[in-house]
Length: 80
Image 1 (cartoon, rainbow, N blue to C red):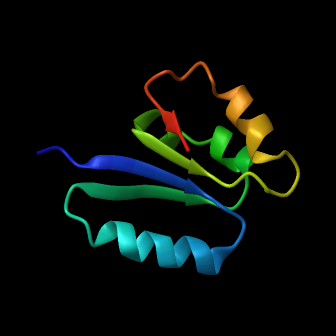
Image 2 (image 1 turned 90 degrees about the horizontal axis):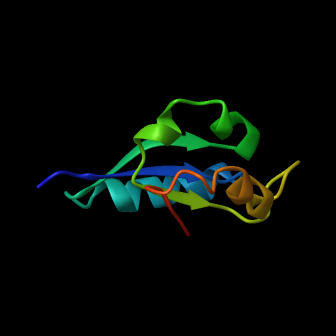
């Protein structure tokens, strides 16, 4: 079975690292990238490879909600 590709966006590195360890332990899930802010994520090509985007709402600069609005046209990405 093909692994579900996940991108994590959160400014708290301890949270991101812990979540990444949990998700990587599951065979069908693969964290392909992590970002500390939404603007950097938007500039990355990794977002186009993702099946799921886990996006923190309280990001520095633009909020997670405003970042989600910017990428709403990527219909294949599920935003949680």
